[in-house]
Length: 179
Image 1: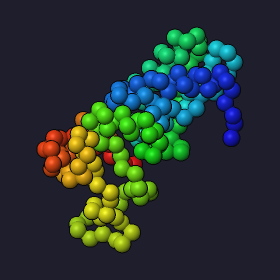
Image 2: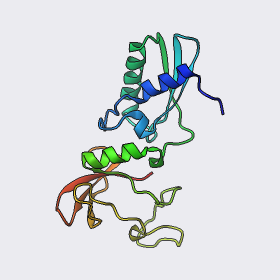
Image 3: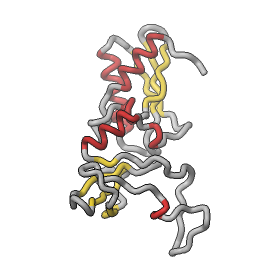
Image 4: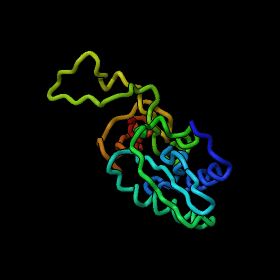
């Protein structure tokens, strides 16, 4: 592993401070999508950005915002490169990012959800290796903390969120889906 120079560390912090265009309560660092910054001399840098999923429409806006911030700090040439491997995972969201999501009224992704491919089945049959929905940890309401919630829609305002409702306080809320 290559160690970042002090300049690269500073520029990584700046690039990571950019708010996410779809979830402005989070920075790109807290979301875990800015992977690295490589300086190519004092005036040229390359930023590695991993989208939350392939085809994420926010990547272009993220790239433009990163370029604007770094150019505002004197970097003349900024290249933002999309890096797909290793793939982004909700495990990349920082503890601070999870806290901010909860405070903003969005249930953060659950921890302890098995990693790997998402099983797809036709009909009600599932294999022993596929977790049933009730095998997963409950989604906690970000408003009152109750674990008694229900799924209203698998998709919400963005493809990475589901719409849920708390059965205790009756408030609807977004849940950042696990990946």
